[in-house]
Amino acid sequence: MRIFHSGTSGGGFFDSKNYLAFRADNNTGTTERMRITTDGKVSIGISSAPADCKFKVYDTQFSMLQVAGPANSGEASIFLATAPANFYYSNSAIAGDVVLSTGGGTTTNLLIQASRANQNIKFITNYGNYGGVRMMLNNDGKVFIGHTDPVKAGGYLLSVAGKVLCEELKVKLYTSWPDFVFAKNYELMPLDSVETFIEENNHLPNVPAAAEVNQNGINTGEMFSIQMRKIEELTLYMIELKKENEKLNQMTEKLQQEIEVIKNQ
Image (tube, rainbow, N blue to C red):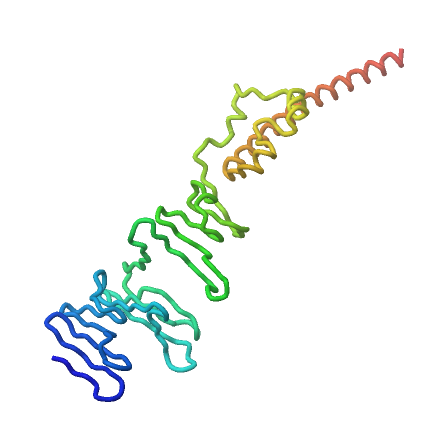
């Protein structure tokens, strides 16, 4: 069955055994604009049924799909029915906001998926005004903030190109905390040896040099451990100095007593 518009512009629809096609253009009405297949698939802008979804919009020039609410309201919604809850893309805050949320159910999940190999999930802002990718989650689970360079990220799961501000940061170490410094068999480096090491290397023993830090950065957890080790070693040095100072005070007091005895003879 074919039905065509009789006006100056061509148009109409064509019904076959496999699909219903809607055709329209300025002349013959032979350009297909929409197709509905017998299995319920809908395609707009392309003359073939979508292979991987139920609804597909295609255009090489304009936005693929735009949803608008009442004039000047800034509100628009797309509702996708799922069971048992509704998954919706909706403005539920203030005019102009878009909220991506699950619609109900205590076990409902919100899934954002890049389903093929080497696909990434990118978060882009201010795209039309020379903005760009602000955050990216790549296909092996690494998170990039402020950049998208895998080389810069190295082997780390989170990489930030910029400053980070937080109210609390917890670092869990998988190495031992340096309480071994207080073990009876710990060999504390003599202070004169520490002085010699500093004169020769310009940094403390067991602490990375400035050149190494500039090149490789620092491991926060490891650096906390190194600093704590130095604090504990300093504590031991202070205890030793206190003992030596007490001995000197005792010797000084004894000498003063002997001097007094000599003076009174």
